[in-house]
Length: 229
Image 1 (cartoon, rainbow, N blue to C red):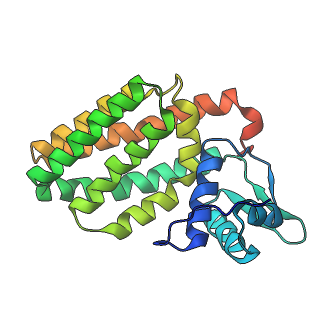
Image 2: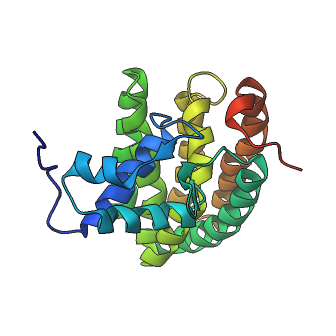
């Protein structure tokens, strides 16, 4: 018997399916190379195939799946070059954001960010990795809220889809949450001082770590990565 999935009424079903599948690909519940079946997923969520098809298209746009006519939809292997390119683009966008945020931040925003950091520490100490990643995203999304530019976060979220898979795999030891939290505090300090240069430097250090991380992770999981030229 199929049980209807408890979708929220405030967001289109195809977007919710996209987010659920995206999370399962990012946290490696769905492994690279897996064939995704429209029929199986529509049955799983008790929906028609149309919203599933639309979710697949969105996943394709973020570089997480490849849709091959007459063959099906496959979860893509991780491309180290795509991760590097995504980090480059994300850094350019987030530096522009953080510099403006350093001049626009309010005491209320700082309080919100500090509360988020405390929750990150709690999630990390209790080994709640998924919760930590959600709080990490919330921390960065807040910067776009400070400058009132939600489209900026939509852009970042699309760019970082492939980066997120490496980020999840790195949290055990390559780039532990405690290290990331320390970097987050440096960004926070730049905002608190209303110092765009300090905030930018902290952001560059934070996002730059992805370069060394992807090299280590790809060497450990060669079968999950593409052979980039």
